[in-house]
Every structure is written in C-alpha cells, then in structure tokens.
Amino acid sequence: MDPRTETLRPERTCVGCREKAARDQLVRLVRVGSPEDGVPRIRVDERSTAPGRGAWVHPDARCLDLAVTRGGLARSFRGPVDAGGLDELRRRLGASESTT
Image (cartoon, rainbow, N blue to C red; front, side):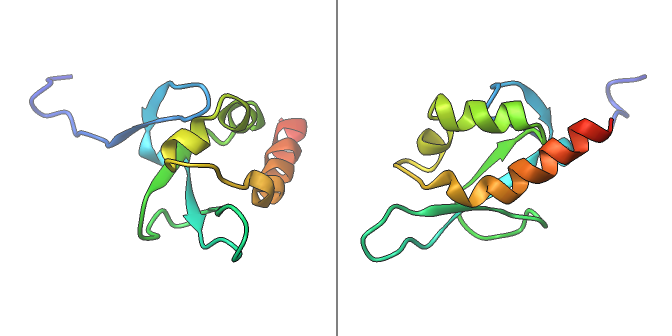
C-alpha cells in the first residue's frame, strides 16, 4: 500500500505491557473524584470521551494486572489511585478469555 494514501489511525500505549496499539484496540480508563479522605478511583470510559487525563490498556486481564502492579496507572494519573473499581472490567475480561 502506498504510504501517502494509507489512512492514519491514532495510536496509544498500553500502560500495562507498554506496547503501542491502535486506539480502537485499547480500553480507556479515567480517574474519577475521590472520597474526602481517600485516593481517586478509576473507572472505564466506555465511549472514550470523558474529560481529563486518561490511561489506555489492552482489553486483557494480564495487561490490567501489569498496569496495577508495575505502577503504570499511578504514573499515568500522576499519583496514587484506587484500582478497586476495575473489578467489573477484570471479571468481563476473565469471562471473555475463558470463552475463546
């Protein structure tokens, strides 16, 4: 294919495995308000349109676990975050892996 006519697709880096991928192949995570005395929580941005800083991760439980254990989420959001809100995503990813 001619590089001049090739359509460009936005790329992002997975905060878990650190590999680049097309934006439509990753899941966007966003930081949401924190409780008065706690650290900010994380939720999935289903439509990838929420305002503010986001972090991108492959829809794979291993990448999500790497993002938490290696500190990729905290680094992306520039501070500590509560990743407990990602349990639902982790369950969905685990279910999709067992059916494939």
